[in-house]
Length: 402
Ligand SMILES: Cc1ncc(COP(=O)(O)O)c(C=O)c1O
Image 1 (cartoon, rainbow, N blue to C red):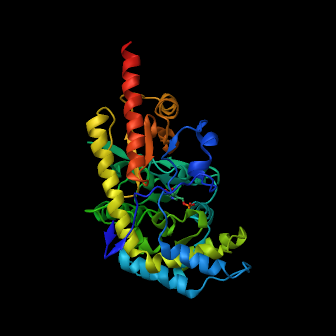
Image 2: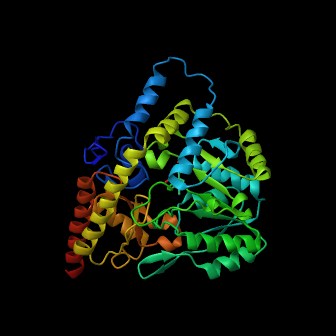
Image 3: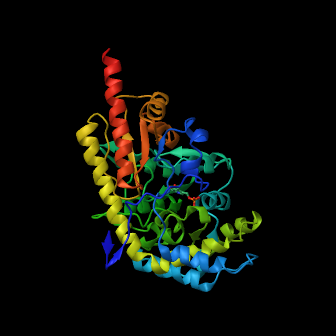
């Protein structure tokens, strides 16, 4: 794939076995079988942009990896990226560095709520949304998405009821949404905003997938809507999904409100996680300074994969339902016509089709009979996985008939 005369080969298979990859090297542990083709955990089978490895290698040449500081150039790269790609103007003081989005969500929950408080989430949703609430002695309050005409929407009536309950202190938003692949429109986010303003509920907005948006859709940073509610909201971002550097354990929290920032910072200090990985900062800065062309090419490739998936499912797996993701590299497959129960579906996928997908039930009870597929892989691998499912479903139909 070529953009501005630079070529990126996303079709090239890069063997990952033996690199300590959670996706590829833990198959027996995760699926109980070494034979599955893994399209599960949200990382990509593509090389990161060369600028990232070059910057890391350059720093690695210096043989001392001792205590470090994060340079102001890193903060500037984050500020410029937010402005350039998302039209969001932020200030350096608002940025808190962290070792990942999930720990950042947990510590923001500590900082901005009390044990027993309700925290609203919109399932089916990324599983750590449940655990980061439950494990911290808060209450999960579900505002399930509505599945209408093959597409997921927010249930604003139910959301209003949940927000109106004074026990519920925070809304944890997933934007774009994992696993359903929605890129919430400005109108939808404005409705969320107006309700949160009415009931004075703070928003924690996980926008880790913000850069992964397909043609015809636009990511709106919740906090960029620009009102007092937005200033009170907390935004989680990282270069990790966009540039495939999740193993560098580096993310940032953007908190415009001074009081809330102080509360979150106090928890970072209390948990002693204020120190950041040397290579995380270097990789993030290189990505944001030099990653545009690579990302533009990646998005074209990923969208073609999404189209390939939809085409394959429509033609060859007609009783499986899926809608094209608007963003992320995740798609949400509805197998309920064959396997309404998750356990049977997983047994089928792992032992008959020999593919490793994420079990739908982990995303909430609404995910029963669904599976999440990660399409950020070479198209040939994606087609191999889909063909395995097709053949196994044919066999399943024959078994049922006999
Ligand atoms: C919505 C969402 N938030 C957070 C994460 C993980 O963030 P981190 O690895 O920085 O903890 C993921 C990974 O898939 C995700 O999809």
